[in-house]
Length: 342
Image (cartoon, rainbow, N blue to C red):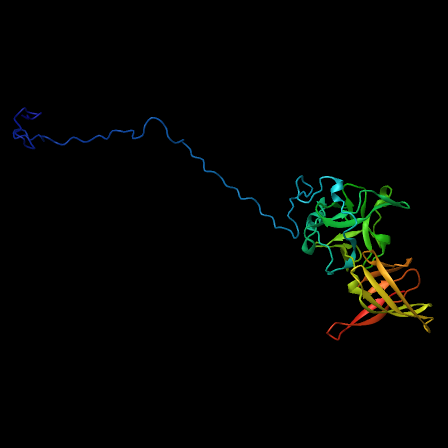
């Protein structure tokens, strides 16, 4: 039973005391209690660190290169493990100068690295992909004051080259640099590795045959002869020489001859030599291959025809004059100019 807290009269369930009017049975305010809804043990750290993903810088890939900044790093594909790995022998082509754009011009895979002065393996790209610049043999031959090793192209590892002093292409395993033979800046001249005593190795400037420019397309040109580049001295086939030729030599006379190929390495040569340009003397001879671009008379080792290409040749020694010859193109009726030198 409820009573008024003020006067003690019976409340009888009313909202107010009938005697003194005091309010009865007012709802008590609910006091919210702080409740810990999580266990005492912490499942997560107070601060969760967000991982930072940093994008690597992307450098433009230069033409003909897949090397890192240092091309000579251990494990670089095509890098020779020892000097003997760069020997290609004499069965394959060597290097020579060719016209820029020639089908036999050489392009270095890592030319941009070489241009920056890095040491790179001399691996070739383009039509020569899988080939490399090497040497015919390990030894250094002697000619006067010069030491030299002949160049060679072949599969496998290449020599390690570095551009030094901005113009010399030096072998990293020898004190030899790339050199145009006798500094004769003409198509077909051989290119080998040559060195001298001390600073004599580094003869450059002017008409020097040891000064080179690494071109953006991967080719390499003599410094002052941008129309020429390093190329493969691919053997000229006798079948490419078949046809009629005119030759002239002052004051000896002139000749008209025909070449008939027996194979890629042998041909028959017959014609008429006009002594002093007047007296006709018929002749015939058989020539066999002596080197990539030389064919020697099988009966006279001193009689050598040297072909600059399939359209030019000469017979040293002597004064030579180039004479254009006419050859009919098969089935086309077109004339093909040829030059001979005697």
